[in-house]
Image (cartoon, rainbow over all chains, first blue to last red; front, side):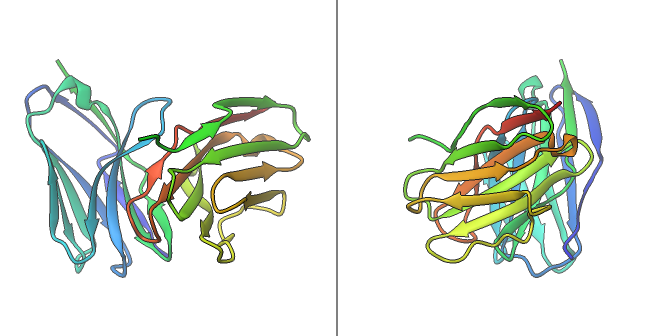
Length: 110
Length: 113
């Protein structure tokens, strides 16, 4: 059974810092990995999708990497801003469905 | 273009009543998913529809839960004889085809009193 773990559970940093969120998964037989952000009381917004054959994806200040063999992904956020404050969720796709981690609650302090 | 929409956005019901939750996927998306997000369990898969294939119901927590997808588009999740543990946010997602990027709706917050 696939299990996804995100570390840390919560992170608070001052504005402007670069930061890394971690995601690990137990079964390397995945189709893709998606990073989402969730604002309080809202649905999920897809940030980046990495196919299993890819090593990384970039969108603006976000960069996500994938190492299937070790079962790890990282989400790098450059020059953090208060608007980046949200919960970040990692999810891996296998057998059609997504399996989610518990998320990292990120707070960027002005 | 229009994203995934869900209705109602909030639903309060009494224990024992039946509820129906609706999802309108992105036009042209053949795959549709239901997930549930609760405080204790995080986000968990419920059911998956792909085209005209039989749905994957492996995530439904009990036989009180059922879902259908009519005409390959709109989906309805029905919960019969609701219990307090059914209180959660129910999220719908769609993707162009199987294994592609999933796009989520805003969710329906269900509260069972």
